[in-house]
Length: 200
Image (cartoon, rainbow, N blue to C red):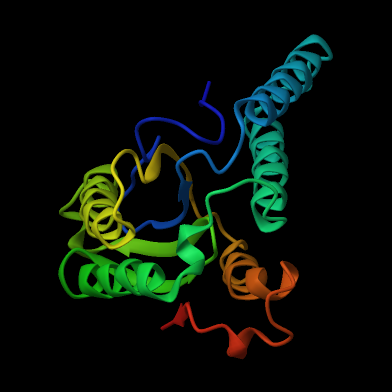
């Protein structure tokens, strides 16, 4: 059985020529009680599927997406600090780091940087790297640089991330989801107006 939504090691599954949807967020951007509520709801729903003999990979995947949507709605509502990525200098560090990775280790399809989280759609160049190592390196580099700018110490990113392999028929929906995230959050009226969005 797959582990749900946010997890310590990503990706849970890595496949050749796969495209990944990855979301990572600032440290402390979702309170523990919210995480516990979502996880409890997930476990209850999963147990109900099992009891009703309705459990399969597709039904579990649907539950995972619902849980992700709850987290993302909370993040979009900016209901909990920090909002460091809302500062242009900080967003620029993350933006440039992703573009650099695009020349070395990954193929970027699109991404958007919100005030407290980042959505990325990518694949690994030649399947030579492990995605979780690429993300660890990116997060470590940007955390150090951003903390220097902010004149602070301590964790910058949450270690857990949400990730999954994009399935057949999902690609265009996910691209639209990423590009429209700033509009959905009420930050801009048109997606083209959001400075921190990238599309190949």
